Image 1 (cartoon, rainbow, N blue to C red):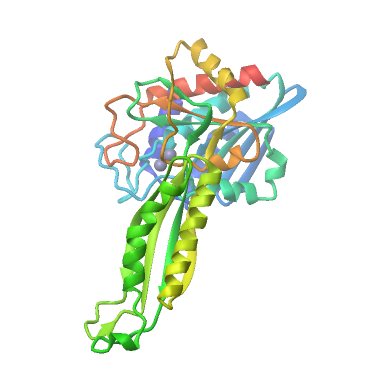
Image 2 (cartoon, rainbow, N blue to C red):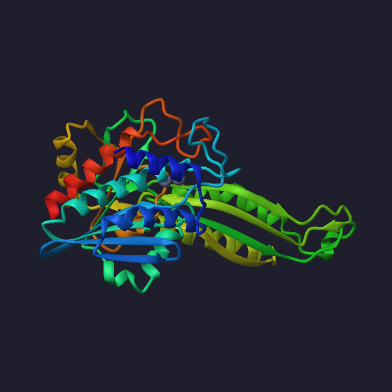
Length: 371
Ligand SMILES: [Zn+2]
Ligand SMILES: [Zn+2]
């Protein structure tokens, strides 16, 4: 286990953000060399990696996924393994998730699955929601297309080692949406001669956050950025933009909210004689947990004598693992990182090393039941 902690610390010292994870991928590749996987896929969806361990008999293909990317946030926790890259840090614990999947690789190297095969996937760019999509878009994904997929995320705010479960939606789906308005500049002494997006912006800033009231399930529209014209006092603004994050627990609700937001923007833009361009960024699908896999994961936790908790409501944050749940039965669960532990993405957050062994044990328990 010590080698896994060492690996986790060296990953922590050398964080790389979304789509730049080449050195991280190299470190993982080096770790797996002596483990002699039956198949290795490199540069999957960019910087991703997959290692395949085959069982003796034919059977189901299980996929266990972790994330390669760190965050563009400074690591403020002083430790021997503090980040050596200014302004970047593993503040979501993806270094720990990687160590867990590496530990699973060690176990599979010693003892292949009884049947079927196991794919260990190191996915790029989770934080921007691009990585899972990039893996699915890679033509080689067909070679590892799973029958079942699993992932875990550490969760500060829950007791250390507690397994957090939920049937159905585990984490919300979300998308960033940017509205770009084009009007016409004019002299600020003659604003009537131009087309200023200010009124449209003001109306939309008030009306868009009200839209979730028209959606049947939970949803939220949060304004995150607004822009109007340039700082030129002689000029009436001719362009503007408004950016927001939309989220919901159900994919249909999210799609409906997006539709309504676009329709409202179009209506107001037409009234104001502006031109509208809509852009979507950082799209995350709803993470849906297959109810049939629930008892399997719960049993794995109980066998390790770990406490479990059923979360009554889904998490309002998003995970791009949700995209896998649209392709095969999947299950994403949480591992408590300590009730008082700094939250994910906070500067002083650091993955608890004690969770590595727990994570490996959980995945081994799951795979023992299915292979
Ligand atoms: Zn994160
Ligand atoms: Zn994360």
